[in-house]
Amino acid sequence: RHSSPAQTEFYQAAEEVLECLRPLFERSPYYHDHSIIERIVEPERQIMFRVCWTDDAGKVQVNKGYRVQFNSALGPYKGGLRFHPSVTAGTIKFLGFEQIFKNALTGLPIGGGKGGSDFDPKGKSDTEIMRFCQSFMSELYRHIGPATDVPAGDIGVGAREIGYLFGQYKRLTGCYEGVLTGKGLSWGGSLGRKEATGYGAVYFAQSMLEARGEGIEGKTCLVSGAGNVAIYTIEKLYELGATPITCSDSRGMLHDPRGIDLALLKELKEVKRVSLEAYLATHPEAHYVPVADYPADGHAVWRIPANAAFPCATQNELTKADAETLLGHGVDCISEGANMPATADAVDLFLGAGVAYGPGKAANAGGVATSQLEMAQNSSMQQWPLEKVDAKLKAIMASVHRQCADTAEEFGEPSNLVLGANIAGFRRVADAMIEQGVC
Ligand code: NDP
Image (cartoon, rainbow, N blue to C red; front, top):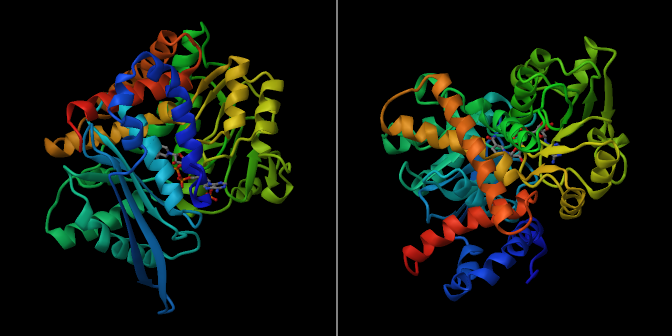
């Protein structure tokens, strides 16, 4: 079945889900009779398109654009757009597949989708970014809509890009409607959306620890990444009395034993958009390790002693050797802000060790859940106060954890939240597919 090397990440994600479903299928052959597996691994629709734009020198540039509309059993397709040079059709397919089960776990009416481009926003001027986004939307607009498919941000797509994409959608359709989430607060965005994925990953860690009679306060934490998810994971960790001591970007990792200076991190990454190395100019006591000096078998962040880990950068950024080091240092809580950041053999080690391990499709569901809250606000033409959004986010993350834990218990592996997340998410989608007939 591994017929295409270009789909390695998709096979990795699908294999994990299918392995976990084995006990469910033994108990309920009913799903097998309806060919649910054969149907669920096949996207309802995949769109690939050419994105031409003109750079500041007047030269025409060409990129690939993608949108995978994977499963609409529970609601309109929902999932982010990723702009990164590593993006392929296989990357988007893996992310879209994960999104189906994540969205199901939120309990909200949203189907699974994902999209993006191999466009690299790094080093581009604002006007180049704008022209690219306008060109990307000039094709995408015909496939999306508030009741069909509602994209959001992901790696390389933040408030600036969502603004340019929305402006072009409005220009092409003449409609001011909730077709994207993560919008600016003065024009349809939800308070708390920017923070939601990171905050949610910390709330999830809190739920896992509380279930074991522990708390997050006082813990020293490793965070990877320095983007949207990492920054707001760090912010919430401080709020709850923990100390995040690392972060990383694509060029290197930063270790500040006294705790990452959050205001400076925001300044470097949200405003100046520069390398983390610039942190050293005002904090010479911190340590910076460039990627070239990372251990050959993993990531420098995971080699620092600490109590908890929050991978918040990208897929497969935490290897088996990293997991061995983390466990050797006594790390007993791992909550994934990123999608599939741990390799399959790293996950096996965490599960074997019985530590609190929250897989991305559960632990980072707060972002998409709050995107759905933004859709609800848009359709009722309201903006809710931050307290209301945050209270809902907290309740949703507690419910996601409860479903994973209860389902893991039901299938005889109480601490295996990977099993719990996959079975609970799958059951909700599969039941809806069966009720809706063969389609
Ligand atoms: P951002 O673009 O804001 O930040 C990504 C961070 O990860 C940056 O620091 C970037 O470095 C680093 N990074 C990206 N790719 C690589 C790579 N190949 N190797 C090393 N470092 C890398 O993205 P987000 O914070 O939004 O997303 C991070 C993760 O969280 C992704 O897995 C995403 O799918 C997941 N996620 C995001 C959600 C959201 O709401 N935004 C929702 C749910 C999951 P640099 O600064 O150098 O580019």
